Each structure stands twice: as C-alpha cells, then as structure tokens.
Image 1: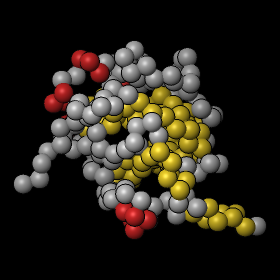
Image 2: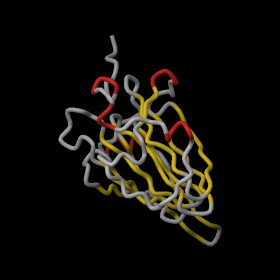
Image 3: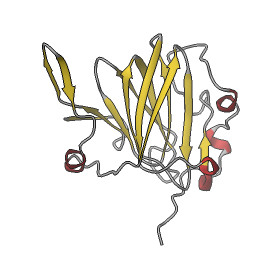
Length: 187
C-alpha cells in the first residue's frame, strides 16, 4: 500500500498493492493494521454503495456532530472525487482537493472527519463504494452548494445532473461554524 499526500495533508490517496496474474487480480481494499501503521487509525462502521450515470454530481455532504471519515473507491467507472475542509479552525478551511478514482487505477481516497464530500461521474456510469467511520444520521446531515463560488471547485462538467436537494444547499459562508464541524464529545 502506498500513501500519496494531497494539498490538504489530512486527505490522502491510497494505492493498494494489486496482485495480477492470468486469472485477473486481487487486492485488499482495507486492512486495519496497515491503515494504523500508515497513520490512518479509523474503524469503519458502515459501508455504502452508490450507482450513478455520467455527469451526475453528488454532494457536497457532511455530518456536523457525528462527522464521518470516509474511504472512497470506484469499482466500476470513473469519478472526480472532492473533499472540502469544513473545520472552521483549520488553516485550510474552505479549500478543496480532488482525486480521479477509476476502476483501473484502483486508488482510494481517505477523507477524515471534518470534510464535506462529493463526486462527479466522468464515465457512462460508476459504482462507488465507501466506508464511513460513523453511522448516517438524517438529523445531522448538512451540505454545501456544489457551485459555491467561494470554494471554486473546478468540476469537470458544465451541466451536471444534481438532485433538487443538493441544488438547494447553502453556500459555505452562510453556514454558522457550529453547524459545520462540531463533533459531539463522548461522555
């Protein structure tokens, strides 16, 4: 497993070791010991699978009090994956990083808690799987408008397919800091 740093240190691209032969290939998509050794000590509690057609844009989503670290991977197709720092005390607050994830490069992106996440499908369709470090909570969900000019994300499509819900999300500057990243402390 190789770790590739991004412009935001906490978001990392992971290249798993792929074992190929005449039958096909094998790879480990998650190994707790290796992740801990690489400084990614997260236990994941929920797996999600998303299927989307070309030009679909999902995001930018987060949970404020039960933030989720995510490990994102494409098993079919290609996406432009984005993480936006929403930790209001971070020196990279409001900045974004992206990664191209494909079924061929088998890369994963690790997004720690405190980031909004979204992606755009570049291929005819894509199957995206991702692990989450906390359970989805409908009452805690939040989001940032995908086209917020302040984040300046350079999405690779001029006319994305966006849900009505995602198209009504607020811009980052309209969200109070306590509604962005405010993890509940365990008793």
